[in-house]
Length: 525
Image 1 (cartoon, rainbow, N blue to C red):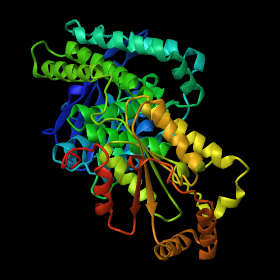
Image 2: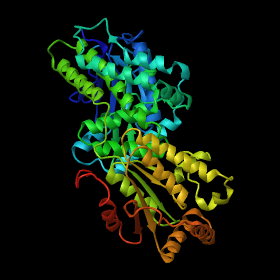
Image 3: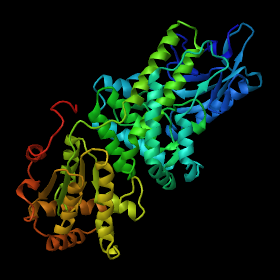
Image 4: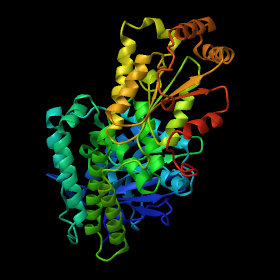
């Protein structure tokens, strides 16, 4: 006799059934029903028993809550399934339910990030939209109730994690790669335990996604993003550092041959979330999340019929995740360098900084977002200079630049290049950036954006209109900065590049790229 999750559902096109490790998806033209499998799984010291309809309903409700936080337009409801006298299963009366299903809007396969990547359609704008969606999700997510002092023990538990099921048809030993990945994770945990506790104290452990890969993310041509829930083994597995979600998505991109897109995604997330402290932890979290997924897929293979296509599929997927777990530590292809991007108000420096960063595979650590964060602004909230410039407390500017350079150091620790975007109006500020490069034994380049007063005033007029302030306010700020500007003639010619940013970006890009190692032409798509 078939188990409840194996029956077709009337009204859903059963020619389109897809399986995950612990669920079955019934795909219709406009919607999807996701049914949990009637299995028992032991995850560490916790047993998850889905052999009863009520337990599967609870699991569906839990996933619905997560899907509504991730993508409210996709998650619909949890529906009861009944079986009529002829054995047909359909949506019906809850009082007669034999099973329950999560109902979702169907998303186009062509919008899945994995499919977009394969088709060469995962653009810069799409990556930025995904990073923004994930950053917003993390910002809204509840904090996990984990004591910072216990974070090391908790992570060690996930490293040692064993998954099993009394329903397994066989118990094939895990590949030896699993033990190798575990050994590396343990060694990292020993080295970085203090930093991991500091992250927990800062509130970065949240109710996240838990398995953010390209297969769970959808983005359409208009940049609208939807993300579907991942791990199906309970909420505890999703209470992780936000760095875990970022790391696994980036590592999935790199494993599929797009190291450049992996670096760009992390850089966009770090910029939007104001979280550059995640960089030294990326390798560890990516490896750990991939190991957990591999163990679950290996169990799914043990639950499948021996020799079946399903068993082969799960073994292959588990090995792919183990390969991801062993791909750590992952280092960028391009050599590290410190680029300080400076200039006066409306000089176009930030536009150039973003272009340079993209070409050298670096994040941009900006003084403006750092300043906004320090005075309490959060994602999507901008505090324009014309409103706050004179409200600074004495010494606040130095605090901003100190935090900018601290964040840049976290990036440099991982062997990556970094672009620091600020005015850098004084020799002292530029000297501090240069000292950061010297500390890591790296090349340094100060790129100075210059523009005529006529072009500057035109750009200030656009800003005044944008901010809803008088242009005179902006002009006064610009005049003050010009009066405070200190020449960069103290820097060696090899460390200083002045650009007229009224010229086309492509022209200036050539001058910059002549000084730096960049991605090969065409590699960034």
